[in-house]
Image (tube, rainbow, N blue to C red):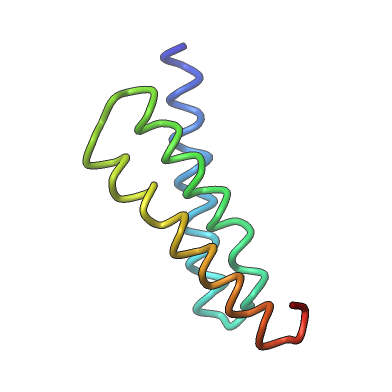
Length: 79
């Protein structure tokens, strides 16, 4: 279990940083995919390890990302 969490942390870190990189390189909205997966991964790690600050940080990013997806969808006429 410890090894799985270690890998989940690294994968989530890489995904989050890759999402941030692609956002700043102007690959929006595609940057939301890796960043969102990283956020979900870190939220899972926070839940498993009962790390409340980590859980607070990343779990609150989920509704923020959902709001961004909804805003983007409306601006593109998807909804």
